[in-house]
Image: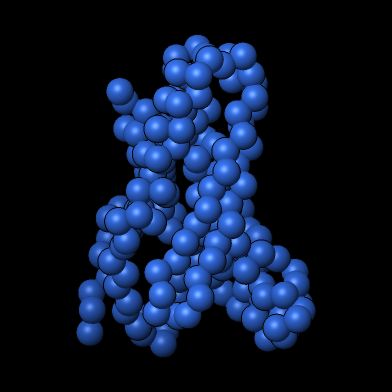
Length: 167
């Protein structure tokens, strides 16, 4: 039986639990925030939230926008708005996933600044995690074990974004 590591070594964690409504609806809890994850009605869900791949696309898009914003602020560049569109595609289950990212930068930026912000986007922590892949470990908790809502070490993503912006 696997021994669960102390919460401090888990990093940021999410609790995902079935709601009992519909076939697939899950409530995801991160700290004090909760949101629904579901499948579209067309495939048997309630359509009450994004599906898991939508969340991965949202993670990539939001991390990209945040990392670009952090870098532009550090440089005091005139970036007025960042918008990122992400599309996910995979043909078969064993095929490699493809995320297409389109970045829109608004503001009085010159070509050199725009190019640098695209370079910074390539270093956002979620991009790097998807690009290099991840190791996933799974343990089965004892039947009497309740999951706590604690999120372990907070700020891991912010620390990674700041590291990505170091030039």
